[in-house]
Image 1 (tube, one colour):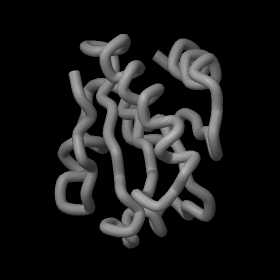
Image 2 (tube, one colour; image 1 turned 90 degrees about the horizontal axis):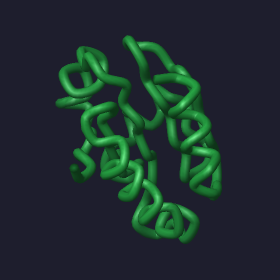
Image 3 (cartoon, one colour; image 1 turned 45 degrees about the horizontal axis):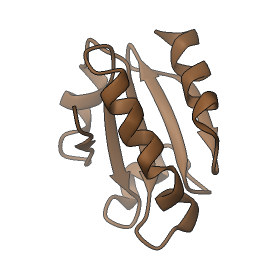
Image 4 (tube, helix red, strand yellow; image 1 turned 90 degrees about the vertical axis):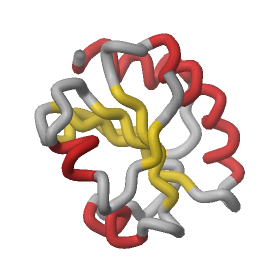
Length: 106
C-alpha cells in the first residue's frame, strides 16, 4: 500500500477516526533528510500494510497542520493511535528506529 496525503481537510477522517494506527511523515520537497527517509517510509507502508496507515504531510502545503503538532524540524514522523500521539521520531533515522516505534505501539 502506498502512502496517503494528509491535509487539514482529510486529517479528522483519515487520522483521528482511523481504527488503525497512523504514521505521519511531516516533510518538504527541499529537505534532504526528508528525501533520504522517503524510501524507508515507503518500505514501512508496504511491510505494515493492513496493520497501519502511512501518511505524508508536506509542511509547506499544510502549515496549519504542521503548527498544530508544533513541528519545528523535519523530517518529523509521528505515530497516532486512537487519536493520540503514541510516538515521535525527529530527523533522519535508520529503519530499525521506525520498526521499534511501530512494534512497541501496534
